[in-house]
Length: 452
Image (cartoon, rainbow, N blue to C red; front, top):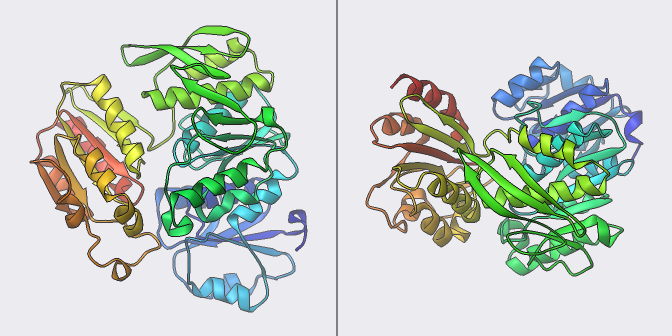
């Protein structure tokens, strides 16, 4: 293939995906012509179009496609899209067609790449590392799997010495990267439609870790076996880098941070959950190794606002609390609900959950049932299929999952009916959670709760 610099036009098949849109923004910011297709018009695609990117939402071969020249056009696609007439056209006409992960890998080859991997926590950690890099004014660019609340995007360019990337294990995409620094937050079973079983996903992470040239630049959460030398991090137990003395005061968390040689007391931030202090610990470890001073890092931690749909919290004058989160695995739901129960032990919690993928619902049904049973009231939405078809997963439905949940107050609902059902419920805290299109409830809920 040609060098990326030789291409003047970049066509994205599935441009509305969170990872794809970051790449699209990168090339758009570089002065290239960027256009693409997506199945659904969302807030993200609207923002991309406002930034000057041309997007279509129908699978049609029109003049915008037939006028493209294969010599100077690179087509980038996501493996989530299996069949599409537009993609067939590019392949049949011998355009250069590459997976998103391959293109991201090519970009990281020419930077000092900091890659954040893990089945949980990688979006928060990579966004936090990016925020700390920005506050320390390091020359970096970042490609994130979520929208930073601080810079309102999943992409930021502040130079090209470093790149911060979210290393996605789906389809083994992270093996395309060239990490100089790396983090492994967790290797829990997930994406079993790709890996088959827990052993194979753990092997995938070991292969990723092997890409890092130096042991001292690989950071792994203590207790995760990665098969090579590395530095460890943890919370409330000794490790190469660890945090302890956690305490809460008026919705703020205070903690002390330990390096191998010193202790820095009284970091403070408003991001809840022990798991998030864990993410902060490894982000601080990396920035410390990059030479950032702790005064700068303390200020940066304190003004970190988090990521959209990662425990996005609203507290209303009427006493109601609304939290929206992207969690779509039992471990993640446990972390979110656990944080709510820690901060608000006596409040009545209504959970609205949209399962993501039939295969994940099937593979982790008992775990989902256990985590959802920690609510007081549950509305279980229909499964969001994404790339899967119901006909291939007979009997795997939200009604089937609901039968496993040990709650008296529970019901199954279509997304279209969910808002009206929510309005009929008695709750102190509302949690909407899931990775599909449940986010369409966010604006109506915010407006409604503010008025009641």
